[in-house]
Amino acid sequence: MNRFISILIATASIMCGCKSKVAEISGTLENPVAGQYIYLDELLPDQLKTVDSVLIGADGRFGFKKEVTGPSFCILRINNSNSLTMLLEPGDNITMNALFDSLSYPSALTGSKSTGLMVEYNLQLRNSIKKFRSLSGIYAENIENPELYKVVESLDSLASTYMSEINTYTKNYIDQNLTSLVSLVALYQQIAPNVYVMNPSQDLRYFIKVDSALSKNYPNNELVKSLHEQIVEMAMAIESRSANSEALMNMEVPDIALPAPGGDTVKLSSTRGSVVLLDFWASWCEPCRMENPNLVKAYNTYRGKGFQIYQVSLDKTREAWVKGIEEDRLGRWIHVSDLKFWNSPVVAQYKIQSIPGNYLLDKDGRVIAVNLRGEALDRKLAEIFQQ
Image (tube, rainbow, N blue to C red; front, side, top):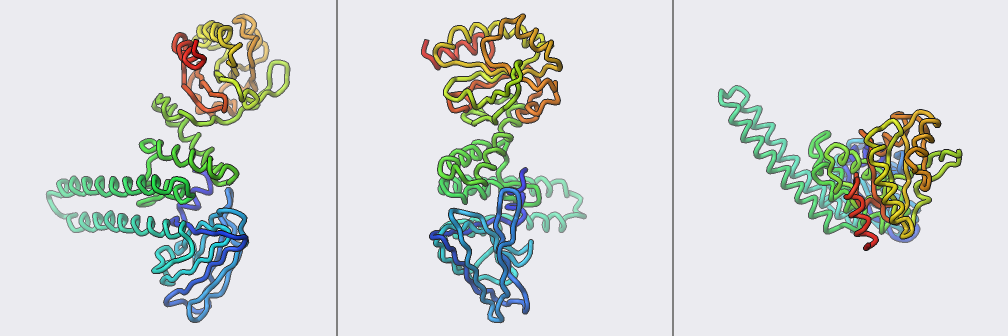
């Protein structure tokens, strides 16, 4: 999990909103501790940066002003275990009241719809956490019970019910706020340390849904870009474990930039505008060599219609690689390799566990299909090019 997501989780996520070039945050904290500072941190893709701090007044009052150019995550905190995550937007004027030791659950908050939505979610999550903690109490009361196993079965059933409830609530919350950055935070909530409300293996569709919506609405937001990279990795890991190609549908694959046989670096992204078969092979791989004639046939049939092949080799030597290209008559399309065998960075990048393997990409570099071979590849290309 990358750093910005980890920070969101560690601070018990909730967000804040902002709207002209300056956002203002002011509030009153009940039962303040004398001499205590309150801090404002900005959440960046690779770090949490403290941008301001003020001494809380004897009456509990505090205030901040921060210049913002677009939606940005900020964290209001007394310490790392007592904080409120906010989504600031230009022009926001936020006022809040909270207990000094409970910033995450303001008793009143105005001036930010986004923050209000996150506080609403946080309260629901807190209720679920209380339910789970009550189960621990029941278990402790029955530790000497000779029929403890029956109690445990009942508690497991209740835990599953409680988890299903908060999972369903979270999905509905995301659906209702899909175009807002608050949906990003909802993806990574925990009911207990390392126990996530949303499971990527089971709920990947929602991760992809949020990624697609936010990438469209906030294409230049660094946190959204980081989210996209992480979700592509998630989808690839799940696909490699389950061979479920649906996990990757419509995802934009990571770019590749490797040397061609002549030495020039060729990027996968240079093929945008064509339907591309991204194929992983090696001259030493017999199943790959057996599949190559099918690739030649497909290329000859559809190259005039906008079809291209970008073939990545996991060979160890240039001589073997080039000889394989020549012997199988593959020289008409793009070939690249760093000749690092299974140590090539693309192996980790694409979660490659075996070859041959391929991704069929649309003109924007998004996945249409995975691991098509022989007639299956021809049928798919015929469908795409309507031949």
